[in-house]
Image 1 (cartoon, rainbow over the protein chains, first blue to last red):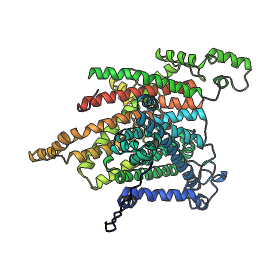
Image 2 (image 1 turned 180 degrees about the vertical axis):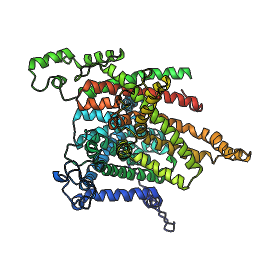
Image 3 (image 1 turned 90 degrees about the horizontal axis):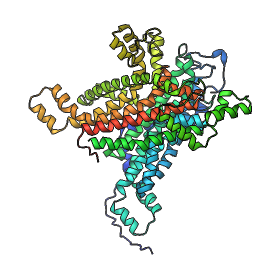
Amino acid sequence: MEAKIEVPINQNFEKRKGPFAEFVTRFMGSTSAMIGLILLAILIFSAVFAPVLAPYDPYESNLPEALNGPSGAHIMGTDELGRDIFSRTLYGARISLLVGVEAVALALTCGILLGALAGFYGGKIDTTIMGIMDVMLSFPSILLAIAFMTVMGRGVEKAVIAIGIVSIPEYARIVRASVLSVKENVYITAARAIGNNDKRLIFVHILPNIMAPIIVRATVGVSVAILEAAALGFLGLGVEPPTAEWGTMLGAGRQTIFNAPHIVTFPGLAITLTVMAFNLLGDGLRDVLDPRLK
Amino acid sequence: MITYIIRRIFLLIPVLFGVSLATFVVMHLFTTDPAEIILGQHATVERAAALREEMGLNKPIYIQFGDYLSGALQGDLGKSVITKSSISEELIKRFPATVELAIAAICIAMVLGVTLGTISAVKQNSIFDYGTMVAALMGVSMPIFWLGLMMIIIFSVTLGWLPSSGRIGIGMQPDNITGLYILDSLLTGNMESLRDAFEHLIMPAMALGSYSTAIIARMTRATMLETIRQDYIRTARAKGLSETVVIIKHGLRNALIPVVTVIGLQVGSLLGGAVLTETVFSWPGIGSYVVEGVMASDYPRVQGAVLLIGTIFVMVNLMVDVLYSYLDPRIKHM
């Protein structure tokens, strides 16, 4: 049976800012968050409008113009097949952003579920889940991702899965620790006392209260995922050629580094800027959402 | 303290078992039949079957794992399916190269990171501080393999100052004592080798250490800023001690405790970075061995190297934990 209590609203009460409005104000005040956001906006814009912005077809090879340095016609020069590097770099933003965000989404979903189960139930469930996580953390994550890609073969979705899986333990650990720190609070006991089941306790009462550190970690996590995706591409384990992907472009350009260094310069710069955008955004969000983490 | 260390070593056993199981399981999901890699696609069915039998691939998977584990415990990680050479021997041969690179990288990261971080904190909001923090942001955002390539373009291709690949020039190898070329050249007094080894080492070590340098500089700056606002620093200044003594003896010593953990964590992450750095600079270590194995679909090779790196990673983390609880007695070791 549910009881409803009507609380008279005091009209004279000074209107306070909602939590979201307060968040926006503080976010706008953070220089690093704003720079990160602007950089990210530019990157997303380039990715979305790549077909409009790109002066050439990123896949059209033009062998007579291969390995030309930056010029008026090709501002970033051409690669070993005469393809326009600027156009390929623009299209590359699509893959990198996609892989970064999707891999983190995958890791976050699994990590939240596993971490919440481990933290909430404790005991054997906790020992088993965290045992597996500890084993995964026993490898440098890029090495584990390489191992998965070796097994699964190349491809964008496979890179998402490999990078996603190797990032799960990080999120599971943070979520578990946060769940442990809030689950003994009085409001959780109260929520349990009024008859909420475990699922509702975890998803409605616990998780919303521990999101701040998770959001911060996930934002920085996207930058790590983008770096790992680029590393896989560089090692020849990323997307299938001729897809324009920054890491793969760097890997291919390595062969011609002595006579055409411009090939590796621009895709690398693009990776650096993208990773920097997420790092700045993450730093800013940390200051805004969770000052204790500073 | 000793019981704590012994307890931690015992706790390693299940983790290391898990590490070897994980490596084995992942590698056995490998889609290509090793027999097919060796014999090629046109081998007769009989030959492939005979080879599978010889390699023990027909046994149940748990027996295969048991065989692998008992081999690994005796230091035998099997044979490469391509070159037929012993994987353990190859790993032992390449191990010093990776160790030398990692030690050089962590030294650079520690010295540069702590120095830059401390000066930034002391001169907070100065141009130096902003410059260092921007450089640190670059350091954590740049892919190390790209930094490596850019270094090659600048210092090898354009300026011609440093060699772009390898560990040492032909015929320059010092007498083998430890396998670490810098140390061996020093021990044998071979200055020519020392110079050559150093010229080969500096770029890969800088590239590999860049990320850690940035992390350590940020961390040192943050803890140092907190420390120099403490009362005991004010007291030290009031006593009339020189600024250098105050900063280094009173400030840095206390600020460094959290930095030590970060340094420890970085040692582990260097192993992952080594895979990429060694590939860029054709450094003949364990990292490039993994990548070559991946390229050749040589799964026992990848499996052996991944198992070794995982084991080192776990050991290093244990050492860091022990060192940390020694440095900071406030940390309880239950």
